Amino acid sequence: MGSDTHRADERRFLDERGSSAALAPNGLNPATIMEKAVRERIVESYFWKEQCFGVNEADIVDRVVDHVSFVGGTHGANQKPSPFLCLAFKLLQLAPDDAVLDEYLRYGGDKFKYLRALACFYVRLTRRAETVYKILEPFLEDRRKLRRKGRAGTSLTYVDQFVDDLLTKDRVCATSLWQMPKREILEDLELLEPRTSPLGDIEDLLEEDEDVDMNGDT
Amino acid sequence: KHWDDVVDEEEDVDTEDDVDPEAEYAAWKLRELKRIKREREAIEAREKERAEVERRRNLTEEERK
Amino acid sequence: MQHLRNIGETGEVKKASAEEVHQRITEVWERLQEQKKASTTTLKERLQLREE
Image (cartoon, rainbow over all chains, first blue to last red; front, side, top):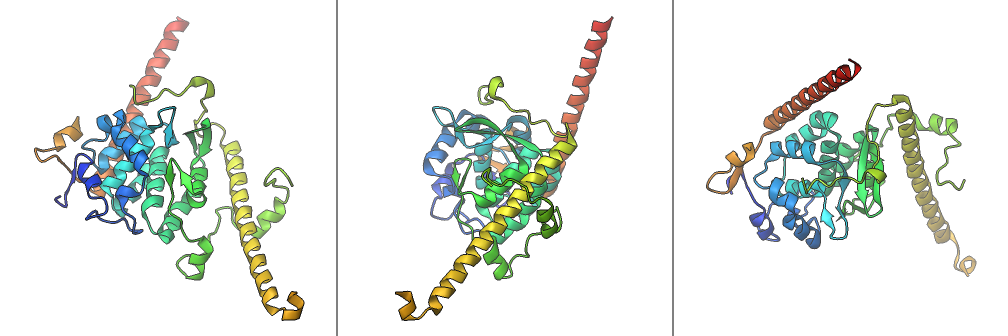
């Protein structure tokens, strides 16, 4: 494959499994980050065939804006993959560099919330732990609403909550997230500065909000 | 088009932003505070655990029985 | 469709640079603003018609 082109389809990407495929920055093989059953559903899906063939990094923007109206993995009795998941898989194939990701996350992300959500998901899957924290945490401030479609049906979530899920949960959008070291370990290694919340000094805030009900059982 | 699932209107959620910016900010602030509290509690729990391990290590054989 | 034109005989598609991605974001954003403007105008017109 020439360095200035991508294969229009996914065949070679999937063939290269375990062989010469370039590894993601976190050392994982992008072709096997999603589970096999999910990959199969994606490449068999109508959305993949119709909307993800011959797509490059710029076309991703159109696809997200035109077709992504919720975050989610697979849904329904036949476990149909969401456009969100299909486009995440396309990103795994395209392997956009940090400059492109930055466009998705910031300039594009300010305008299109689902583009930011998609790029955050991709960053979580492919980047090293300290990079994931550094890139994702600022978006804990993004309170825009997102529609989520899961096994329990349709629900409301927020960009900040989706990002928090990516940082703390094991599984998001039908994909097992690789286990990252805890933040404090990276702080001990001086790879990360302690996080400061946009809310400011935490001690003051906690005193002020002592009555925040954590679990409904306090 | 058939790949764009029509979300069932009955169970759909309203995702329009900036309808009530103040309420949206307040709701976000609550989520952020819960996250901060959760992290602090996790750190405290780990510290407690570490202190407990340390305490046990310092016990004599006799005390441990 | 533009992306289909990009695919040559080889079954390959040209990579987009960060600048091209930036430009595409601007284009898509402007297209949406145009659409929004158009749809609010037609809505206004319809409301006006109804009032008459």
